[in-house]
Every structure is written in C-alpha cells, then in structure tokens.
Length: 310
Image: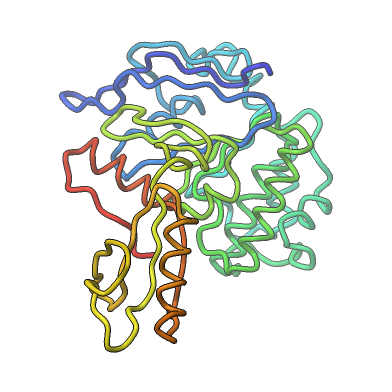
C-alpha cells in the first residue's frame, strides 16, 4: 500500500527542551493509525508538524505527497485534509448548518451538508446556534467540520471527548466506515479502549521518541505475554492450599500467571470440584492494551512499572 504519511528522523526543540527526538513512522492508505502518549510526550508537537501548524528543526515529513512545511503547497494540502482538533473556534452566533456550510466553501468538492449532519448525529440541529450546543453536540460539530471537505486524510485529536457511550460507539462506527471507504485516519487519544476499537496500528510516544509500534493485539509482545488467571479464594482455604503457585491481591482475589492457561485451569478446577467448592469470579486474560501502554511509558521514563486496575 502507498504511504499517505511518512515521518523520518523528526526533531523539534523549544529552547533547551527537546520535544521530538528522532521520531519515525509511516501511515498507509486506508488505515487507522493511533499515536499514543502521555501529555508532554511529544505526540502533539508531532501532529502539529504533520498538520502544517508548526515547523520542524530537521527530518523528513511527507503528507499526501507534499511537505506540510512548504507554504507554496499549503492550500493544496489543506483541501485534501480534515482536522478534528481538541479546540476548534466556531462563530457562536452562527447556526449548525451555517457553520458547516461556511466550511464547505473552503473545499473544491465538499460533501453535502445534510449528509454530514446525519453522519455525526446532528440531524434536526441545523437551525440551532452553535453557542447553545451541549459539550457532546459541539464535539459532533467539530467532527462535521473535519468531514465536510471529504478528506483523503483525517486527523482526529481526542475525537469522542464529551460523548456518552452510545454516541462514542456511533462515532467509532463512523470512523471505521470512513476507513473502509478509503479515508486514512491519524488518531490521538488517551482512551486505550478507543485505540483498541479503532486502530489498525498504534505507536507509543514517550520522551519525544517512538518506544513501540504494532497492532493493538501485538504491541509490546501483548499476544505472547503470560496469561493471568484470577478468582476469589474459596472460604476456609489459603493460597498454600492451591495446587498451583498464586499471589494474593489486595481485593481478596488471587492471581495465577501461566504461559499456557489450559493446563493450569484444569488443575485449579479439578481441585475446586474435588473440594465441592467454586472459584468465584474466575477470569482468564492477557495484559490489556492499557497494561502494555503503562509498562512501555513507565519504562521509558524510568518509573516503576504499573498494572492497570481495569
């Protein structure tokens, strides 16, 4: 597949602060690529350079075959990109329809205004002033402004902030539909659930560098990590009574780690059945994307690795 975005050895400093230090990655046509990282990790600076809002110190950046740092091709690039930023300034006294229609005029072949309002869940809100919208509705308007130009490449920065669960999942379906129709999406989010649901590939940024890249299922060796078997210790028993080694947890449960869970589960369930008891709350799981993300970013910054509590 052709690369829609190419970043090689990207550097950017603010005085003595090295915000981006040798970042490199590529985003292929028709995929959703998520850039993950803590605040201050360098992902926002990287995105702003790709979007053409900030210059770079060195390195190669290619977006849709153009250099976003070149003023001569700025308009040509803008006409093919859609931006959904965290804060988009809109005229508060314009209606929803007027706001979207005004932005449609910036593009050579925009989508239909009513179609876009329907896509983002603003049908029936066209006559409402932008200033009267709820937080979630304003975010839908932001998404509409990103889609109205029918972009080849869509930048999404925390796209579902303020959405209720139903609206969030509807937005995810929309993003996946756009991907399936050929739109390339570059996403930043602090929600590991969102990254898991949407991204074809993810890259983790820490201290200005890419510390891991892969699919959500394989990032950081997640697919080959030891399984965690957890359950509540039956009444009248101790960890020492179990047929396998286990670690007690603060919530009253115990955790058993295993390279291969099937045999361990067989020993545990046979032990429980033999005692006429049950293993309440029995779960088997691999490390979540959040577990891996925390481990990668903690390790990169020298912090003690943590485990998510989800």
